[in-house]
Each structure stands twice: as structure tokens, then as C-alpha cells.
Amino acid sequence: MTKPAPFIRDATAADEAAWRGLWAQYLAFYKVELADDVTAHTWARILDPSSRVAMRVAEVNGVLAGFAIHHFHDSTWVKTPDCYLEDLFLDATYRGRGIGRALIDDLIAIATAKGWSRLYWHTDRDNATARKLYDTYAPEDGHVRYRLKLC
Image (cartoon, rainbow, N blue to C red):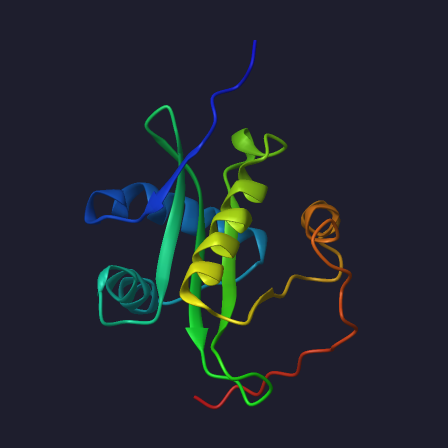
């Protein structure tokens, strides 16, 4: 029996509880704890049409299976904006079904339609499952990220 294809769409206010459940799993995967007000602020920005932060969700049979939080920004290397896929996550139940690929392909289509130059993302070196998918799009570019915590 074939699995139903995901329905990819913008997040809505009605998605909050399901997203928070997925978000908690995502943070647990990366062994990160965030203050509740940071999560609330992220959600508010996702829903704010004037914010650059946006989220696409994958729905399967009415269940939120995963999300892709992204935003665009100007670049000094190209004339049009870049799109940064900041957070991509799927509930374990839905992995291996092409939903992660569907979310990335959806962002590629959005970025292309808006005339943005590039789509990029980061993942942990040891995230072999995700890297197996990501490597089908492009080889990793050899950059090492440095992050200073300022507050």
C-alpha cells in the first residue's frame, strides 16, 4: 500500500499545538533547551506577515508531520536574497517517506519564484540521516561555523 503524499502549506495559527510538539522533539534531538518566551517569540514571528521568518509544514492525513522554518536575507555575494533553511524536522513516524525532500523542494520552488539566489542550511556533522538526504542536493561546502553567544 502506498503512503499518502504530504500536503505542503504555510503554517496557520491552528498549527500551534502540533508545532510545539514537533519543536520540543527537535530541540530534544539537538539537546537544546530554550526558554518558553523564545519559543513563543518564534511562533509569533512565524505567523507575522511582516516577519522574514516563515514556516512551511508537511501535513499527512490531517496530521502535522514536519516543518521547515526559513527566512531570507541580503547577501554581499549575489544581487538577490539568499534563503536560509534554519530548522527542518520530521516526526520519526514520517521519516523515510520523502517528506523532508518535499519540504526542501517546496522551498526551492518558493525561492526560485521569488528570484532569490541560493538556498542553504546547516546540520551537525554527525547527523548522518539528514546528511544522506542533503548530499543528494549538493556536496557540503567545507565551511565551519563559529558562533559567539552575545547575550
